Length: 346
Image (cartoon, rainbow, N blue to C red; front, side):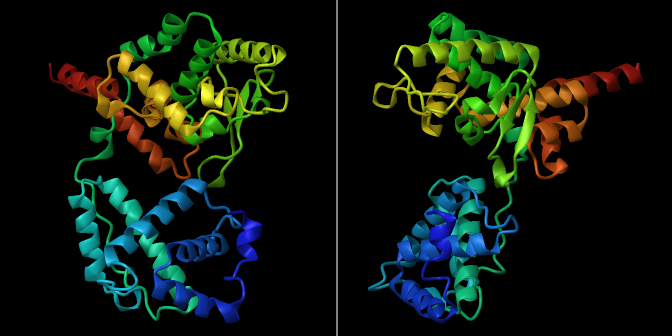
């Protein structure tokens, strides 16, 4: 749903807002409540109405799941206007019982919190029952739970597209994918969102127009990365000349799956490609995922610079403290510190 549609929706008229919100809450209408939530998030956004699609999807999923917990509208176990903090805390315990990770539970709670703030704002509730509910704490620190790819395995990873596909279009595209993730540190959505026009080899940069939180940034391109991009851009142009790619297709990375051939690569397709390479490189399943490449880029950047501000700038973090995790993830840095202690004690 676009911003224009949201702003002209049923929620924009104050005289209708409370009535519609009450009707949605009483009927536990997931569609209407999702619309109210989106309108509220866009209206109250600190970024002039910009809310990421991923956030909206996650919060809508949380609302649907929570409505399933409170029960069907015709015979609910808990009415939305009669909830208290303990009910929501039991919901969170149930999520953990279903096997959800702490991070996912936190996201669901944030979605539920946003829904109740929207209902209070619309006048359908007198108070927010989720206001005092605390998000669960992750006992295992992120740097111990989420690992980066080590240097020997990374060399192997970068060599795999050529080994598996030779010098064809698939290998060249996949080399770009691994470079964007493990060298430049782009997120999955940023990788698939790139257009050809976003890559400027003359200036030596990639323009990430739609980063997390609506933040744009320009990421410098190394000489070796520029060669990878150039090889793919030539292969991509050959596809276009042969008529296998539409002239008006703007996306940098395209799918070679028969059902999506020549169209923009999806996040799901990207994930399958990356996981395939991680598996062949011998990495364990708990390290699968596109974000493993980004974590690897972060640790490499910190190892090379020891400067969190540089890491934060390149990776597009809103706060430099977010980048501190990469200093803790790098096993080489930690090993160096321990060896230095031994040297000093000799």
